[in-house]
Length: 161
Image 1 (tube, one colour):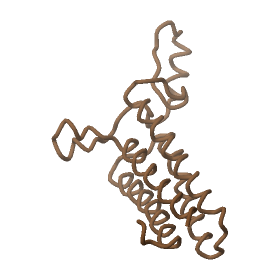
Image 2: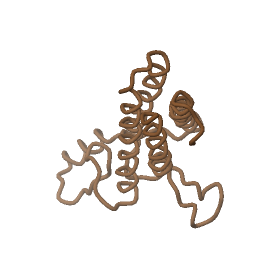
Image 3: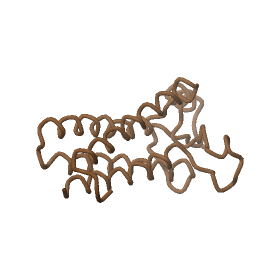
């Protein structure tokens, strides 16, 4: 990375966000609809692509820092989502399953009718489904967490050039 120019680093980071978005939409087309938190992870990638294009056109020095912020934001959401998937902590009640203990029939019906189509605390796909190795028990949220953290570092390298 030492020999890459600022613009080359910006292109790499912005194209990586575009690739992640393309991958998300491909998975969606293959029958893996996104949950609410999956959508939350997409928004900073859209911003990073736009920031990258604007940075290349204008050369404004603040833009790579904003790209780093966008990448760090989606990485943090991916980390949080991963913990929700693994039941390490609770997620937003608007997209996770909840218990039915103590609910009246009317409350239960309201919960059923108000439930999202895709729950954030369920794991629809794991890398180990494709490559049956226990060590590859990696979800899409975890891929976004790690990949976006790397992109944040690339954005920071661009900002420091």
